[in-house]
Every structure is written in structure tokens, then in C-alpha cells.
Image 1 (spheres, one colour):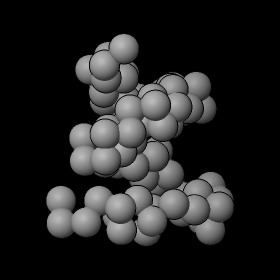
Image 2 (cartoon, one colour):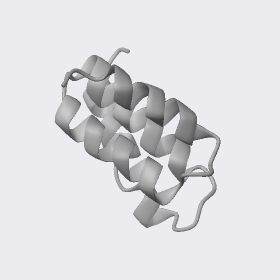
Image 3 (tube, helix red, strand yellow):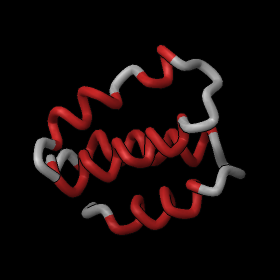
Image 4 (cartoon, helix red, strand yellow):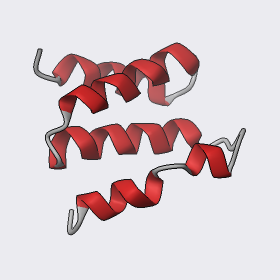
Length: 74
């Protein structure tokens, strides 16, 4: 990714600006993936992934969130 920090900045607050938007779980997942893979912030990525599983357990991104969470270093 060209500028992961800019991507995170663009995604931050999407849920507040667009409450109830159907893309919120995907935005959370993308944020967690960028944090973990590009910015190496696994602690924050873990928090977001756990939030996805808690708040959107039936959403189609929950399975991917679970896989990402399991792949994070302890």
C-alpha cells in the first residue's frame, strides 16, 4: 500500500459519520488489516477484530476477522 497511514486516516471515523451504514464491518476489517500488515500495530488490530466479532458475529466479514485474529502474533 502506498500510504497506509493515510488510508487509516481516511477510514477513521467512517462509522461516526455514517451511523448504521452497511459497510461498517468491512471498513473495520480493512482498518484492522492495514494496522496489522502495513503498520505492524497488532494490538489495535486485535481490538478492532475482536470488536467485529462481538458486534457483528453474523456478518460475512466475521469469518475473515476470526482468521485474521488467529493469524496475529500473540
